[in-house]
Every structure is written in structure tokens, then in C-alpha cells.
Length: 126
Image 1 (cartoon, rainbow, N blue to C red):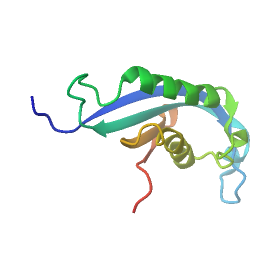
Image 2: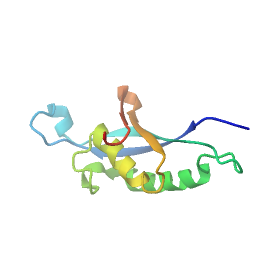
Image 3: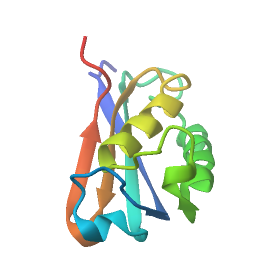
């Protein structure tokens, strides 16, 4: 059976606190505050003819669980690489950690559902 490329997605959630210290940050955001975040990771590619998988979800879930463990109930500002914990930087941070293991990573979407906000990161432009 001939098939074209597909995308698979896995979503995970975490709760974390952060604050912003830059001069242009609105005063409420300079204070410590928290959010419930969700992150969606999308892998694109051709399904393996034998397994039918682009990536085994169990492998992707294990990698996401490690990230969730690091992010969940943390102060994001204290995580190396997240001193400025914007949605943009969180999405790039997740990307950088997953890309070595999943070279077909297509995008990472980080959401704050309670704020109706999201950021999509698809790697650096070439």
C-alpha cells in the first residue's frame, strides 16, 4: 500500500510558575505567577511499512514524560535555558530537547488555555 507522509501528535500538560524581569513587562507579569500549560509535539514522516508507525507513541510518550517531569511544578526561570520563560522560549526549549531523538519533529505548540494563548515553533529558518 502506497501512502504519503503523515503527522502524529502527542500532547502533555504541566503546571508551572514564572515571572518576567524585562522593563517592558506589564507589572502583574513581573510578579511570580503560575499557569497550566499544554505542549503538543508533532512528528511528520512516512509510516514504516512493517509497523505502520512514523514513531512508536510509547517512545514519544517516554520522551515527553521526561520533559514533563522537569517542567511540572517548577519555577521555569530556574530551569537552564528558560531564564526568560515566554511561550516562545518554552516551545523552542522543548524543540531543542526532542529534535536529537526525533529528527522528523515538525513543530511544537505550547498553550496556556486559560489565557487563550499559544505559540507554535517549527525550528530555525534556513
